[in-house]
Length: 375
Figure 1 (cartoon, rainbow, N blue to C red):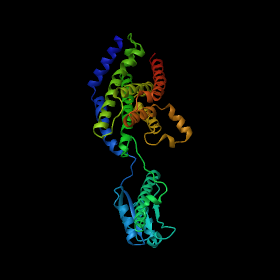
Figure 2 (cartoon, one colour):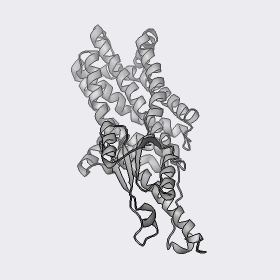
Figure 3 (cartoon, rainbow, N blue to C red):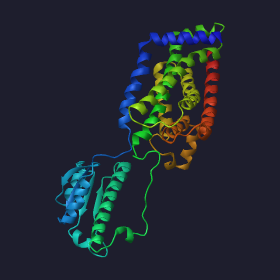
Figure 4 (cartoon, rainbow, N blue to C red):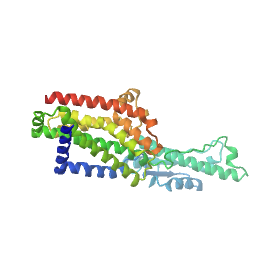
């Protein structure tokens, strides 16, 4: 135990004396937290839209104004013809084009109702689907309002005509703020990068300086060396996790309903995987550049299969099975559940157990690899 304490003291001394590590601990986390916290959003805003109003009646103007007044859209001017609409989409001046036929006002009073055409730039399928959904929702709301006025003129109420009325109740994120969902997951990404990267750099730095071989000829065993070197980065990782969670709550206003000590416990379990990856990579790599390249490849793979950007349910079944070996998936789920739902250890222990199993395998493999390389 005394050997481990000495290695820990040595590692903290090296961290304090290395300006690069201090910068890696502080500046990237702060910068990424505040920039990505605002940039990472699933909302689609400022979508450019153009209109071709062939009806030019009070009804058609009212529909156009209902869409123009919505802050989600940016008005890109009126088009003169359908070919002009297409040219605007081709040039990128507009992402959507709404074409209102000349018979719009007359068709509204007819038995079949009126139709409008919505031309969509489908290059970005996800954003296009969301934006077109917004337009359809606005048109539906406008149609209900028009129908309500029409029925009131006849002494009827819309509630008495519609057979079913849905009244949604939104739980956990009533304002549907994407930052409430994305920022807690961002904490997982930042902690993973810091712990894996710093651990990998620490060991490969000893190899490059030739001091790792010197440590091995002392009474220290490889286990002592590894444990002594990772304990400082566990402490740093827990500190970074606490700082990011504090920023998420105090700066971004994400409500935290869970237990802070439970978060630290799950964070400690998760770091057996992230630090284990750092040890494994640094054992194989010969220099810091190789560590950076291999960690970048591994973390990109883990990140896209964690549910950070894309819902796991939308992935093919065979890809979903691959995500079971991804520790980011479980810790990301845990943080989101604890932040928004207030879930505790009783609900989240299966994810913690999965992280512990993965971390045990990764950390054990890294120790065996390290011991084989230095012996």
